[in-house]
Length: 255
Image (cartoon, rainbow, N blue to C red):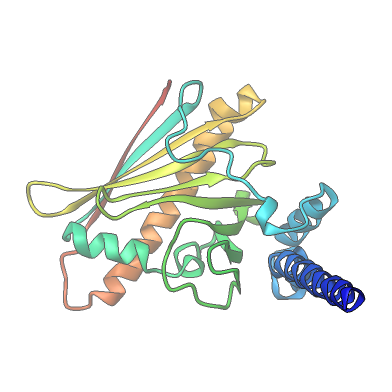
């Protein structure tokens, strides 16, 4: 009887250990880079960027971290800020920015989406797929087309803040990029019932030339294209509204 109980206990332990081992393996595989089909990513630089991540031992999305988190002290970062205005209500404009597919939002001559991954949902979406809304933990791989396509650069960002109470969206450059920091969009309603979007960028790198000259120059062009594209999409959706307007102002500073 004792022998039978001992054998039964050993079998039970084996089954339990096998179960947990299987769970660990499956869990690891679900967010592994092995699930990425590079053939479905049209941008060469994005494909090379992902391959380089693997060479740097980033073999799964769970290993990707933002270079800044919500509430991180911004001391020591340079700041570039610009204002955009849309002649419609805060609620409508906020909803539009949150529920627009990133592949449509970043669909221009200068920026395009190669891949979107959701840490929360373990969902991988290519550029021709649909992401129904923005959420924290979403990683977006972008291709930046500079100097009218003479130079292409890949980068990746992670959404770290979606605040529907204070109307704030933040996304951070992931660790490993040449530039560290985040971009922050704050939405306000003015006295006329229109929406003001303050788009701020907090950034730093190991190059003074990049921080002082190159980053502000290209960031200005890329953010302008993004917001103009969002305005175009909004106007297309709001066909009954004929007075949707757009304006922009900018400033640069350092903390």
